Image (cartoon, rainbow, N blue to C red):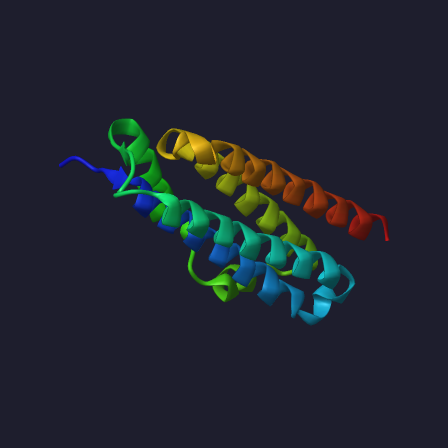
Length: 157
């Protein structure tokens, strides 16, 4: 059985990934223990919501289903879909976290996995949108920097 994904499907997955990220950060910001990190978590949620909109715009601009992802690349995406990158329940993820440090480390891991996913998307995105995808990848890298800084500040306190 051959697995294939169209660009439309990939962009829908990217939007879901961003919704999941926004939900995770929003829920984490409401944790009483996260009060000192709340502003950063709220900002991260807003960034993820903006990324979702960007992916929706890319999807709207497609004519037809767009390029098809097959072979090893499709298997890779399927593995991500089956993995926790697409974990739909932020509260379940947060329930595994005992401390705010755990929340930040979990978020760093999710950001890294989203970057890997987006790098894998490059070949499925129309050339006119690759710059926008690269911007999102760089912003996700910035999220890791913000989270790492928050973790360092927390440890220093």
